[in-house]
Image 1: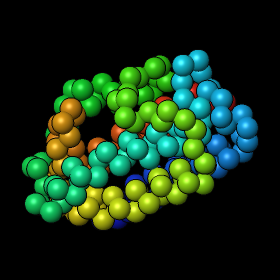
Image 2 (image 1 turned 135 degrees about the vertical axis):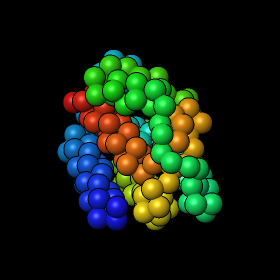
Image 3 (image 1 turned 180 degrees about the vertical axis):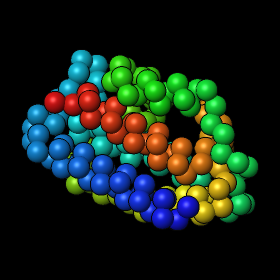
Image 4 (image 1 turned 90 degrees about the vertical axis):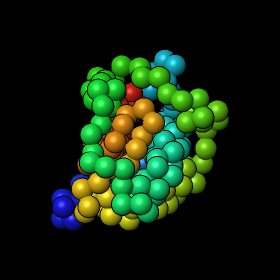
Length: 161
């Protein structure tokens, strides 16, 4: 499981870095929403960081207690992950939506830092084949988290210029 996790995590990190560089390449256009009613590319970086930060407590709690059972995400997880591949609007929690744009380097740094914090407890859960409990999606394993996070990045990338 460790090699699989390491490979999947490296791929996820690569996708983060590519997205940040894409937003950087947009310059001032990065402050304009890619689709009507959507987030600007710059605000998207902060939104993705906030979203991943939301998972921190659930993941750390599960890792400290040897997990919340076997991974078994529910139908809502599968529905949301599938919907993200369509790039159609998906509602989000208000606290995860930045009210204003942020400095790209600051937002990207926050996102990288959150990833550093999440890597070890997720790896621990992956090695044990255990899950953390998400309040809406049920028991998620590290691979479920990575899959959903990749879909989330893909969703936002499709909605950018």
